[in-house]
Length: 452
Image (tube, rainbow, N blue to C red; front, top):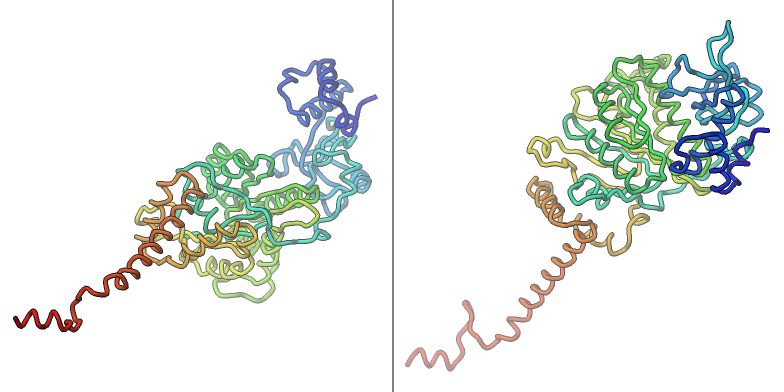
């Protein structure tokens, strides 16, 4: 009798090694426990003359569904799953389903799923007991997501200081053209995968150039899902919604998930082309009904009281010359609880990262930062001005310090020095009250001396 995933998870690693040796699994000693369990399940299926496959579930309106193994898109390798299996295990769109499959018969086009072995890496029975996402309680972010990695990665260091990101943040990165938003997203993704490898990271690229997709896939450790500009708007929407559903299913399993979306502007444009017209049109040619589903996507970001969180950082394009893009930004401006503004003027002066440090910030940042850290940051904000020279000086000071802790401490030291200087200058007139100064009437003795 074949072992199920629940049986394998209860076994010790030494027992799993014995099974792996029995099934002749190569290099089993280098595998993690979860990888080893799936290797054993695959070996069991192959021994029975079947295949062990997995994919992200998409349920169709008719009740049955397909597992999409390749990039969340329909392909010839899709696996059919019956409506009875979906009902039995309470499967939902976005679940990662693994199990034994058979090859398609003569008149069939798809593989068929015979047995569900795992749902999102857990047993199907355990997955059936989870809560639905709308029933979870949303909260403000409580735990800071540290993005600081190296001394020279200034973008993420600035974000940690002036626009901190928490688990469950709903952030908007407002970017004009050629201000470095793609590079910023790449740095954020690498910081998350370095500092928090346990977080499930998705980079969703909508209507982007194919070469940018390749570059992102090669430089980011997370899951990169893309629909390039040569695809249909329907394809953009299908990919975006399936990635969102996948993230929601993981949050239901009390996991922390981050989605980096580039860009919400182009996603809203795709919805504007696809939805049935409502008969009303805003300036710029966008239908008001086109905002509902992108807002559902962006609004899904939250910290959950029952455990888990969904963080979404989405880019919004401005100053593109299109009135529609400005309307989309205005519509999303008040929905986030964190904003990071990029400044084109700084980018033109080759001041990078081109972050507008005055306009960037996070709501309820006191929940994410310590009191001393918060006081120093507020002191920095009080002394800010809009000149590029101030930004340049701010960045130079950050470059010369190894960590953000040292950077903030340098402001405390400077403040103490200024305070000491002011107190000593205030004491001087009191100590030298006998000395004469310009504009002061001479004493009687000095007056008589001058007449002599």
